[in-house]
Image (tube, rainbow, N blue to C red):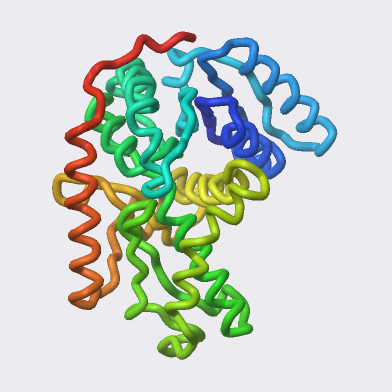
Length: 301
C-alpha cells in the first residue's frame, strides 16, 4: 500500500523548515513543493532531495504547480506575501490584508479539492476561514492553537518540575492576543494545578517575542505542530489537536480528537470567565474577517 502524498505551498522560512521536518521524519511517501516563485520551489526541492539521500529518508521530493496539488492527500499552506510587520499588538493579524488575496487565489485554484488542507499562514484563524469559504473544501484546519497548547504544557511542566507528558491542558480561541488558556481544566498527573498559572500564562504570551527577537521568525514550533497534525488527519495516529475550525460563524481553535483520521470536538468544560473570553475572541475575529480585502490575486505558478 502506497504512503501519503503531501503538498507544501510556500518555500519561505516556515515552508523550508516544515519540508525539512517532513523529509527527515519520512512522513509522506511523496512531497510536492509549490511556490509562486518557481526557482524557489525547484531550489528547495533539490536541497530536500539531497537531505533525503543523506538521511536515508524514503520520501521523494518534487517541485510542482498549484494544479498538481489535487493529487495530494493533504496540502499545507505556508505562503506569505511580502509586507513589513510594524504592529505592536495583534502582531499575527498584521499580515491579514497582505496574505488574504494570495490565499484566496490559491483557494480558488483548489476549489472542490477533496483532501485535507492545513493552514499555517497568519493570521491563521482568519486565513483558515477565508480558504474554506473560497475553496469549498470540507476538511480545512488551522495550525496555531495546538502550538499554543504545546507551549503551555511545556512551560507548566517546567514550573512544576515534571515531565510534559504528565500535563493535560489546552489553549483555545484565537492564535494571537486573544488566546484562551483553559486553566480550570488543566491537570498535572491527573490532579488540579497547584503552580502559579498566571506566571505560566505570562511566559506563554512572551514566548513568541522571545523567538522572534532571537531568530526573526517562528518556524520550528509551527513545523512540529503541522507534523503532529498530519499524522492525525491522515489516520496514521489517534489523538488530540487544538485546531482552528468552525465555531458558530467564525473559525477559532478547538480541541479535536482524531480517530482514524476523523475529528470530533472535545472542548473541556469552561468557567464563565473563560467562556466570556472565548466569546470575545470570536466577536473580534468576526469583525476582523468582515474587513479582509475582498479581491483575489491571480496566483502565479
